[in-house]
Length: 346
Ligand SMILES: CCCCCCCCCCCCCC(=O)NCCO
Image (spheres, rainbow, N blue to C red):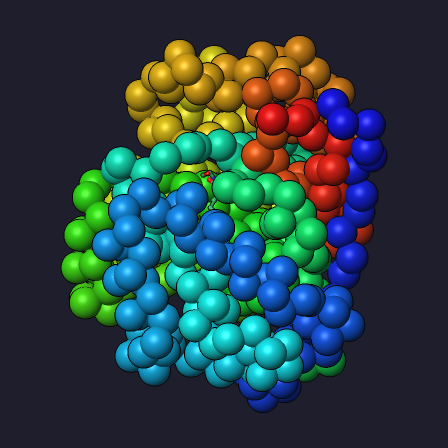
């Protein structure tokens, strides 16, 4: 460990009633993102996420044609961020499509963990570690966003500055959701899904948070709307049995596992980056490390603090972990993101 402590992520308000071009301007200006640091970081991230130079060039072509590939309001939000910061538009576009162009069968490193659990009273907690390439760069960009509508808070999310999709979020009194990378299929299947007008994966997740008013609606939407990339959506609700892992292929649904279905631990669900019905590879068994830690705590002792501790055990917490979020849709006071500056070094 590198001697630093984890730090709470700062919270910014984004008002969905503002015109899309203006929504993120105050956020990016007050966070004072340095354009050349950002550009270098995105270049590095893209090269690390995409193994082939040809794919990097293809992404750069897509990034130049924003109107064709990025739907509203996201296109204008991205434009507003570029205008406010001076970061070239193509770089902000690349940051926002990097997952959809890199999540397929032969992609490189994996690491990310999401857990939905019920405590002894049936209260649902949802925690996640977001692990990715170039963690130092992403830690510097990690923020919490309080999305407002009609003058009040609609949902909380954790994201990276400049990234307008949502990978982690909780809608008050309704449900929480996180996305874990699923690498399956071939890269050209993601391209076909683009042509078929599937949703950019984490723009879709944000839309679930904006539109769905309860767990059941969120689950139906996650199962039924085609996404460009394969993904695991992990969803928690506000009632004792409300928890699910939705496994998506590019464009189609692959499987759903509900909380309670696994008889060995019916009170929680763990998803890393492997299909729930298959054993994880021995070289990357974060799932069993998390299961072992959950069983050691036990349902009687489970709460937000204990879930954070589970997400901090070795393997689950690793050199690529950028942040840990613990949330509970039933209780709006439980939404906390810690930037994991306390991680193990390379
Ligand atoms: C503005 C900076 C751009 C940041 C792009 C980050 C995209 C993150 C996608 C996260 C995918 C889910 C996390 C996960 O499962 N990671 C394991 C794969 O390494």
